[in-house]
Image (cartoon, rainbow, N blue to C red; front, side, top):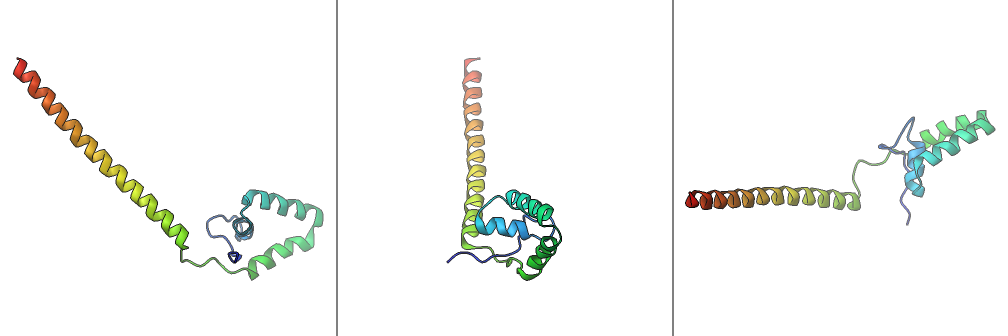
Length: 109
């Protein structure tokens, strides 16, 4: 079953109608906005009102994140944590190498 059609919270300029349609149809919302503008120019009055009627009818997207978004966020956090651990480990290794190099230089003197 396809996801429900909602107003977009993240990708909105006026009411989120074009952003919501873009998310629903998996199309760039800029293309939807261009189509809306062209329809507004050529259809005039009734289409302008239709936009606001659609905006009033469509529900806001629920706050809960989907499992997919949650998993993406978990992976992102995990990757960031791994990068931090790797950086810290690299710093420790570099410090030990520098200590050994300094010790060998001191022995040579």
